[in-house]
Amino acid sequence: MKAAVLHSVGAPFTVEDVVLAAPLGREVRVDVRASGLCHSDRHVQLEGLGMPFPSVLGHEISGVVAEIGPDVTELAPGDHVVAYLVSHCGRCRDCIAGEPFRCANTDYVRRSPEQGPRITRRNGEELAQVVDISGFAEQVLVHENNLVKVNDEIPFDRACLLGCGVITGAGAAINTAQVRVGDTVAVIGAGGVGLNVVQGARIAGASRIIAIDLQDEKLELARRFGATHTINSGSVDDVVAAVAEIAGTAGVDHSFEVIGLVPTVRLALDVLRPGGTAYAIGLQKPGAQLALDGAPDLFPLQKSLKGVFMGSTNPKRDIPVYADLYLQGRLNLDDLIHNHISLDGINEAYEELEGGKVARSIIVFD
Ligand SMILES: [Zn+2]
Ligand SMILES: [Zn+2]
Image 1: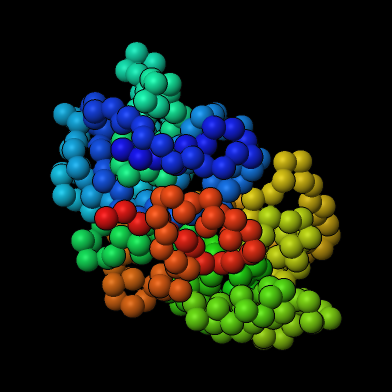
Image 2: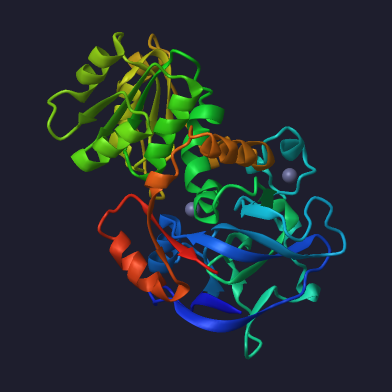
């Protein structure tokens, strides 16, 4: 089968014939039908981020179960599935509590050295399976814990988005913040994840959802996802005052930082009302330091700052719900898609992404 292989940091992807092993134990072989070009794979390609090479990236996939290992219990051939990239054991205290994103036993889903690699080049060289999926390929071989069965009716190119971008954003509002009906929300950064925070807040019933960004096109798009108000932070003198005016109180109940910069995390704290919580979703550079002012942030304003990982997603509970919400017209996935490409078009599509485009290119397979 074909896969886009990355041989070293900074190299282009090369589409090659590779060999996928037969499923053992609880492994599942999936025919990939759609694979989204997530920005985080671009970061791995350009910066390495400690990942092994040569490797196959790609983690935002949907497809059809082709073959199951002898110990698989939850899936059968023909099932439509979405991959979930946070590996977890399913048996520890965190997993049982419905918080697999905190699981420390990530090795549980991996092969032992004696079992051999899941993916190899034609010459037998092992290909690293990045985040245990390797979805830039015609097929994947993954542990069943990394798969979620979804409604057959959701198109594959929409379903793949549920595995990463959508749950990261919508889950932050719905699960992490537990936004309630009538709450007020500010979202700083209206890129792909930010738009999903906006629609998560809309689904949860937030009364005012304020999208903040420097680009008017992104703010326009945010309205299509449920933003009730927008602020171009480049053309407003005082963003904090503007948020307070829209919220009708001293600030919002929940603010979300989706950029990954210290000043915007500071802004997320500043736009809160007393007792509010700021959620840091954007990936910060290692060593980034945030100065907290003990007075007044903590006392008397009682503000909180919380880090968010993968939208606190419980995949088997949440992903099928998002699929249903899409089919009911309540979750916007259509506007997250830029175009469909073939596996061979991956380098070109990632180059195009550098232009700051919000919507995804999706690799589709027949
Ligand atoms: Zn991703
Ligand atoms: Zn676990």
